Amino acid sequence: MDVSLLKTIPLFADVPDDKLGKIAPFAETDEFAEGQVVVKEGGYSNHFFAIEDGTAKVERGGQHIADLGPGDVFGEQGLLEKQERSATVTASSRLRVIKIEHWELSRMRKSMPDVVEELRRKVEERAG
Image (cartoon, one colour):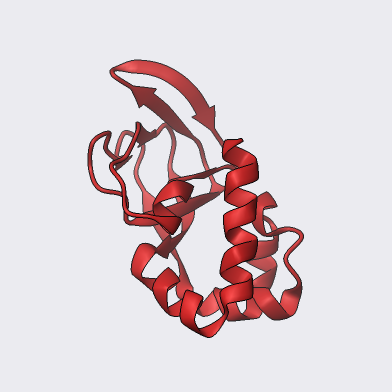
Protein backbone atom coordinates (compact mmCIF):
# COMPACT_ATOMS: atom_id res chain seq x y z
CA MET A 1 0.00 0.00 0.00
CA ASP A 2 1.21 3.51 -0.81
CA VAL A 3 2.17 5.70 2.16
CA SER A 4 0.31 8.67 0.63
CA LEU A 5 -2.95 6.69 0.88
CA LEU A 6 -2.37 6.10 4.60
CA LYS A 7 -1.63 9.83 5.04
CA THR A 8 -5.19 10.67 3.91
CA ILE A 9 -6.51 9.04 7.10
CA PRO A 10 -6.41 11.52 10.02
CA LEU A 11 -5.25 8.80 12.44
CA PHE A 12 -2.06 8.43 10.37
CA ALA A 13 -1.67 12.04 9.20
CA ASP A 14 1.00 12.95 11.76
CA VAL A 15 2.93 9.68 11.61
CA PRO A 16 6.28 10.26 9.85
CA ASP A 17 6.57 8.79 6.35
CA ASP A 18 9.39 6.43 7.34
CA LYS A 19 7.17 4.87 10.02
CA LEU A 20 4.16 4.73 7.69
CA GLY A 21 6.41 2.94 5.24
CA LYS A 22 6.68 0.19 7.84
CA ILE A 23 2.90 0.08 8.39
CA ALA A 24 1.97 0.10 4.68
CA PRO A 25 2.88 -3.58 4.04
CA PHE A 26 0.46 -4.59 6.82
CA ALA A 27 -2.48 -2.68 5.31
CA GLU A 28 -4.76 -3.65 2.45
CA THR A 29 -7.85 -2.26 0.78
CA ASP A 30 -11.26 -3.88 0.71
CA GLU A 31 -14.63 -2.97 -0.81
CA PHE A 32 -18.19 -3.48 0.38
CA ALA A 33 -21.44 -3.08 -1.56
CA GLU A 34 -24.18 -0.77 -0.30
CA GLY A 35 -26.13 -2.56 2.43
CA GLN A 36 -23.33 -5.02 3.21
CA VAL A 37 -22.44 -5.45 6.90
CA VAL A 38 -18.75 -4.68 7.51
CA VAL A 39 -18.71 -5.57 11.22
CA LYS A 40 -21.48 -7.03 13.36
CA GLU A 41 -22.24 -6.06 16.95
CA GLY A 42 -21.17 -8.86 19.29
CA GLY A 43 -18.81 -10.37 16.72
CA TYR A 44 -15.14 -10.58 17.55
CA SER A 45 -12.95 -7.70 16.61
CA ASN A 46 -10.13 -8.59 14.23
CA HIS A 47 -9.68 -5.58 11.95
CA PHE A 48 -9.14 -1.88 12.13
CA PHE A 49 -10.82 0.01 9.27
CA ALA A 50 -10.28 3.47 7.78
CA ILE A 51 -12.76 4.70 5.17
CA GLU A 52 -11.04 5.69 1.95
CA ASP A 53 -14.24 6.34 -0.04
CA GLY A 54 -17.97 6.00 0.58
CA THR A 55 -20.18 6.07 3.66
CA ALA A 56 -21.31 3.73 6.41
CA LYS A 57 -23.85 3.78 9.22
CA VAL A 58 -23.22 2.67 12.79
CA GLU A 59 -25.93 0.99 14.85
CA ARG A 60 -25.94 -0.27 18.41
CA GLY A 61 -28.83 -2.38 19.65
CA GLY A 62 -30.71 -1.60 16.43
CA GLN A 63 -30.46 2.17 17.02
CA HIS A 64 -28.67 4.42 14.50
CA ILE A 65 -25.85 6.16 16.39
CA ALA A 66 -23.53 7.62 13.73
CA ASP A 67 -22.70 8.07 10.06
CA LEU A 68 -19.13 7.66 8.83
CA GLY A 69 -17.40 8.94 5.73
CA PRO A 70 -13.95 9.29 4.12
CA GLY A 71 -11.18 9.58 6.72
CA ASP A 72 -13.27 8.12 9.54
CA VAL A 73 -12.04 5.02 11.32
CA PHE A 74 -13.76 2.20 13.16
CA GLY A 75 -12.73 -1.02 14.85
CA GLU A 76 -9.67 0.68 16.34
CA GLN A 77 -10.06 -0.94 19.78
CA GLY A 78 -9.86 -4.30 18.01
CA LEU A 79 -6.50 -3.30 16.59
CA LEU A 80 -5.01 -3.24 20.08
CA GLU A 81 -6.90 -5.96 21.91
CA LYS A 82 -9.29 -8.72 21.01
CA GLN A 83 -12.80 -7.79 22.10
CA GLU A 84 -16.38 -8.08 20.92
CA ARG A 85 -17.64 -5.45 18.50
CA SER A 86 -19.65 -2.76 20.26
CA ALA A 87 -21.71 -1.83 17.18
CA THR A 88 -22.75 -2.94 13.70
CA VAL A 89 -21.28 -0.99 10.79
CA THR A 90 -23.08 -1.28 7.43
CA ALA A 91 -22.05 0.27 4.12
CA SER A 92 -24.60 2.97 3.23
CA SER A 93 -23.02 3.42 -0.20
CA ARG A 94 -20.31 1.56 -2.08
CA LEU A 95 -17.54 1.55 0.51
CA ARG A 96 -13.78 1.31 0.04
CA VAL A 97 -11.71 0.84 3.19
CA ILE A 98 -8.15 0.37 4.30
CA LYS A 99 -7.90 -2.45 6.79
CA ILE A 100 -5.20 -3.70 9.09
CA GLU A 101 -5.61 -7.19 10.51
CA HIS A 102 -5.27 -7.67 14.27
CA TRP A 103 -2.62 -10.38 13.86
CA GLU A 104 -0.53 -8.10 11.65
CA LEU A 105 -0.28 -5.74 14.60
CA SER A 106 1.47 -8.48 16.60
CA ARG A 107 4.19 -8.55 13.95
CA MET A 108 4.30 -4.75 13.95
CA ARG A 109 4.62 -4.73 17.75
CA LYS A 110 7.73 -6.94 17.55
CA SER A 111 9.42 -5.15 14.68
CA MET A 112 8.40 -1.56 15.43
CA PRO A 113 7.07 -1.09 18.97
CA ASP A 114 7.36 2.72 18.71
CA VAL A 115 4.86 2.79 15.80
CA VAL A 116 2.40 0.59 17.68
CA GLU A 117 2.63 2.82 20.77
CA GLU A 118 1.96 5.86 18.58
CA LEU A 119 -1.17 4.14 17.23
CA ARG A 120 -2.24 3.18 20.76
CA ARG A 121 -1.94 6.81 21.90
CA LYS A 122 -3.98 7.99 18.92
CA VAL A 123 -6.67 5.37 19.57
CA GLU A 124 -6.85 6.30 23.26
CA GLU A 125 -7.10 10.01 22.40
CA ARG A 126 -9.95 9.29 20.01
CA ALA A 127 -11.79 7.09 22.52
CA GLY A 128 -11.09 9.58 25.32
